[in-house]
Image (cartoon, rainbow, N blue to C red):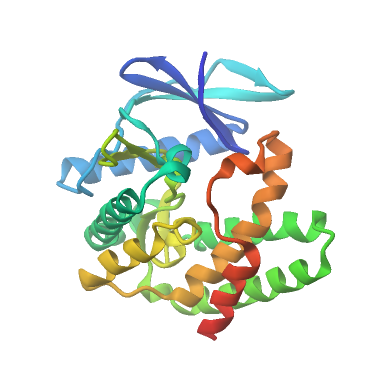
Length: 286
């Protein structure tokens, strides 16, 4: 089976020309994804749309295993396959025009996602309860904890700790602004065609409540960010750049660590912003 995408919790493989299979290293991750996708499907049936494809759940499996690099993954779901290629793999070779086109398209998609999903918050809470901002928990519990455990540069760990403390205080005080969002909104989950047209956003297993600006942090590390930001704000939305840049700096400090863990070359990660530059952006917002 051809691996289309691999993270630290799951793997996506080619199944048929129209479907993909998803495997998770932990059964609870699979169960959470199935619940999220079922709710998202209900939203789509009621008219929720972001202007590009949101892949649908074709089949829930929940059995069968696959071992990759000594990790055992459980077969979870078969999903609709979105055509095109991963934007993350192509952005390094983009022209300025292509970067602008992609940034503007994602700005419109992000705005549609955050504005339209507000209508479903009450139903979501009645179904899943009041979550403790799962994206914030993931950044602080998973990414920050791993950085503090494995990073040897004290100047980086001190700044990551400061950014983490800032996020926890601000995001928990802004819960009234939370909306439903794709919690891994990144170029790695963006499928595009040869003309940089966005075909779809994939990997909606992490779909839940968070501050809208927090969900944008993985886009801020790419050259598309100024164009995304302009398009998103032109439609009437506000971006809390202090939140975006604090989370983005943490992500950039974590990236080389997880790349080593997964055996991925950092050089293939594309034209990412540097940790130092991103942290300077964060400090400029204080």
